[in-house]
Image 1 (cartoon, rainbow, N blue to C red):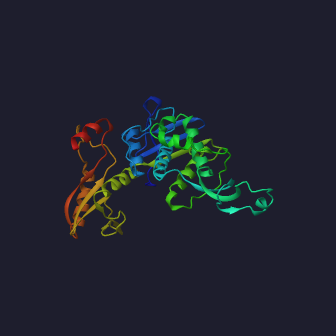
Image 2 (image 1 turned 90 degrees about the vertical axis):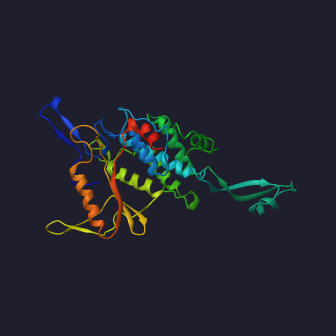
Image 3 (image 1 turned 120 degrees about the vertical axis):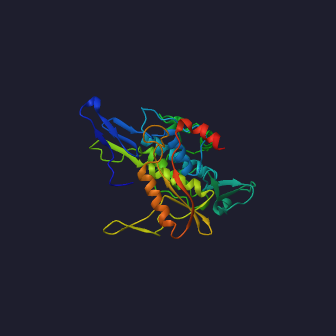
Length: 338
């Protein structure tokens, strides 16, 4: 996030004339029970798409709605938790070893020799102590309880598309639901993705998702710069097909009259054989009508500077801008592209 930017700009001479703008900040404030949501200008379905895609999943439906009665910040965090759960569940439910003692007809593990010697006669069974894979563990309990809590909350519709995951955890034969919030860790690398799910689930159960500040102020907030998320999302999508140069690669410097600034285009596609494409990601509306339509003057000059400098070393075969798509036109535009 650009630390020089203000979070909220308030203008106007009276209540009816008041305007509040937030730039690229998205999230929620809660102060003494009063909540202020800063929504995504392209729609919260678009926001959910980016979060899901960035986590490794592209959801086509059942994003989960968000209303004025719900905290956008908490909704975003729960949505992220759900997608991390999907990612972990792709490897199956986490299994751990659990000690068991049973009378068996065949020896398994270690036998209790004292108990065996005390028998008046051998009945064909031996008391054995052994380890067995089990779903009944503290990590699965915490995840299950988090699912149950969300299912009974305002955000229950977020779980509509993970019915199979819900059913799988509900069918675990837990001996009891006593649990603790210790820092359990999954040591098996196959199930390592459950570590993040477990930590997020603990936060859900402890109501820590929005409790980010002093209780004395009765204030909490969750905010982030959505333009950075959009750029990260675009880079991840392009990486599926193209080789991208690192974002922080220092190759050119621009003099500013006193010193020099590094030149960092948002996207540099490496086509090979010294051929590249230079693109600038803009989290803003692309206007096709009105007085100020198209790419504005400052943005055009910025891209021209990128192309001019990189042409000294590379063959720049294409360049351009990447804008978000308006949510109401996404289906039609996507159909046209395909």
